[in-house]
Length: 387
Image (cartoon, rainbow, N blue to C red; front, side):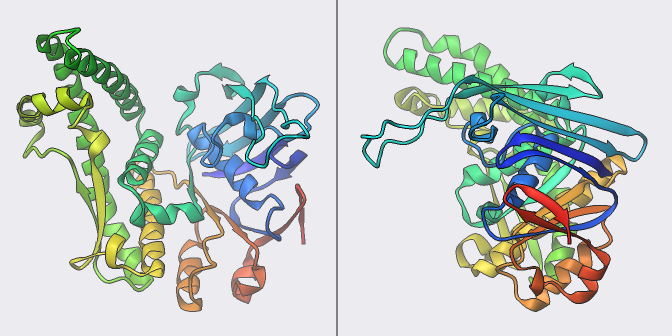
């Protein structure tokens, strides 16, 4: 798979650009705050239908945009066909600056926006377009996959599996809805406004979707394991092993739902007292081991970065195994904390991928032989040109 062409209109700091692309490695070079990460963000959004950086989609619309909207549009060559994807973010409530007399702690109001999506020129729901094209992004915050909170690892698993499986997306969406409704019911029971017997229906629903989600997560991590170990060894980590740590355990899928319900029954009093859901995939975790050493606790920053990167590369290989089409890889400032040996190992590994976008503020640190075979793009204040 590769991106043939991309157009950005009033997206972040890009006013209006179009680029013809193709297979190969593209080095996006430029100083900080010029638009390298914004380009990677746009490419990844065409795959996941959401920004990995923005807290509000209104932030994606270029400040001062006359039209009040941002558009990202691209065409892709997939293994069996071509595909066009368009995403438009439209302003529904304008962003405003605070008054001149505002205190320093009064922030800009980012307003609000709505999103519309087209797949091959046909309007679609965003959920139906997730994973139509696949762009795997690695950016500096992904270091937290290893060293951050469990919620970061769960988010990684959910985003990744949604790209692979529409069924997983639907299960996850329904599971999150059930969690919200069940938590509200637990609080009503605690306050004497409802009976504990009313939980039975929601318990059954929770168990059904929880087991499906857990099974897909566990299967994905198992498929990643040999690839992650291979990439880890190439970059200096011995016996890298990502492991799933679910909040409940079942020996097989058939017994999983019943076991989940039994554990829920044991937690009934605690759940009602706290008014929260205490069991399920929303409380799961993943750990990274080098032999028996947990890297999230005892690994160096460099080891943690390599482990996270190895997992991302493994994710790409697993997706290729599933549908026979290698995803696009976007590397946003991933080289800065790698030494020359590991930097070389990474570049040697990815140089033959179908399409790679590599954003860096230090192109001079890239090996000459790599740069000779790459397409070099200079990013300057929201413009992109070859150099």
